[in-house]
Picture 1: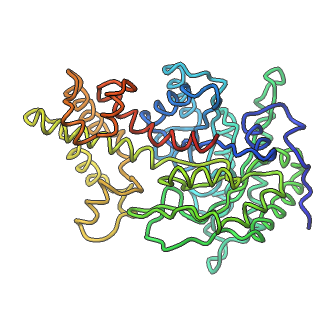
Picture 2: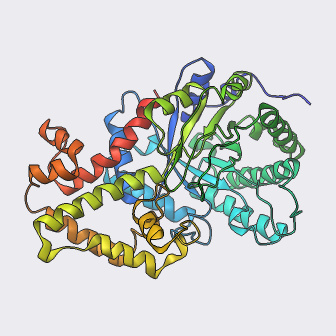
Picture 3: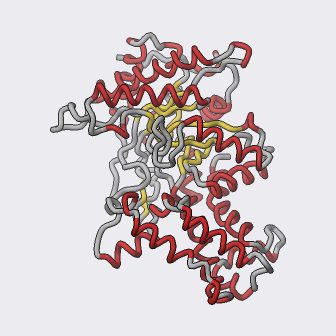
Length: 445
């Protein structure tokens, strides 16, 4: 079977920011787009502000939520898709960001949250979730039905053809939903789809891995052919023309205490294959990659770079550094933020227990310092929020001493001295997060 795809499918549609990335890549330009996979308010504020700083060359901000994070039942954030968009729009207005430069995406949209249920039940809930995402206003949808459900064959991985049929079914649900809610006068551009799934667990590996199997070109081609055939069987030829990217495994991953760096030579066959198809790749788990690795990924057609835990890890680093300064300056009125966070994680272990292993001491170390950063699930807790507010108030009454900044946040001290940021806890936190964002923005051209 051959890939029956137009040479430049996006040229038949109205201009779209995601299409611009795709077309730029097909013109041979190393251009990409970071995908901010986080609901953390400090992370999103930093992303909005940093994108505004480089508005002349970097025009759009892509923010995504996952199926576990945001769904029709609230997900682990407690937000439905409509809630999440309202929340993001509030931050957009608060930070003076142009709403027309915001793209909202849904990640791993499929039956993933309901894998222990029957296929009929899980797929019905997945369809309801797609409807909620489209009705809320998401326009970039990653369709992922690659997981085995309760009544699928437990002896082997899910058949790729079945996964493709399920993804196409979800695409049809999304198309039919949009047709009911869109207004022709709004300049209908249609949804944009990402297909496929990466090997690693979203959010970081659970155990240390010595290496990853880079997706084979033959498997990539088969996924494309089977998914295109499934779209055609659903009468979705026009929707297939709006598939912009494919998720594959380029060989990058991270876990509690390791990072697998991108090796361009290992991914060269995938990179060369991308030049023969009208798609780009979407790379997941790119957190903690070096700036050089990120630039190499974009050059090799991994044009959409997912990042999440690295951003909340930077936030956690900044806050812990501020807590260290607070202990030196105001020991008698300390917010005890680090201790409060630890107590909260111990009291509610559901979001870290299955991920952190070893002795009690090793688990305690991981709760604070793991690159997987499961602490990101706990910053919204009322007690943690109260401690954070106390920390910021305690340290915000006067400029922080140069000596403590040199000890705890030396890079930020340099930026204070050069006049790039102010000497305040808030400025230090945002700058720490921005140090990660800048690597992605720079890599994306």
